[in-house]
Length: 104
Image (cartoon, rainbow, N blue to C red; front, top):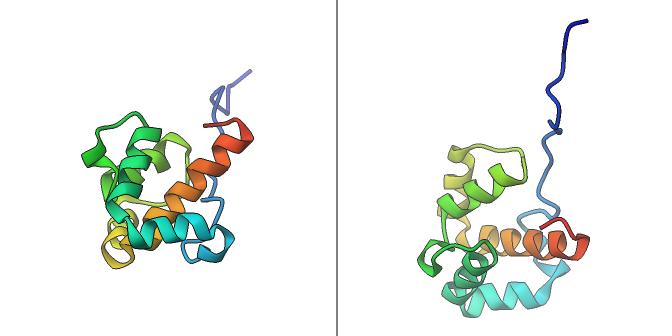
């Protein structure tokens, strides 16, 4: 019998919120708008990374890879370059939701 699927493999998923879903979590949105650097440190802390690593494409790519979220490094770069606050808030919302679900 031939093995057609690798054990433990799972299907790619999506972020749990859209990048522009700021109204679903106004607290995180305000946090990102008024203290963007602090939000980055919070994300880095959640992911056990250095505070300086919490913003930008690298942390988004690491998170996306860890949770098998669809996308690419190019897409991560474009999101963080064009909409840094929105993409960072999206990442924080996803982390918070995964914590609530017990899968973070």
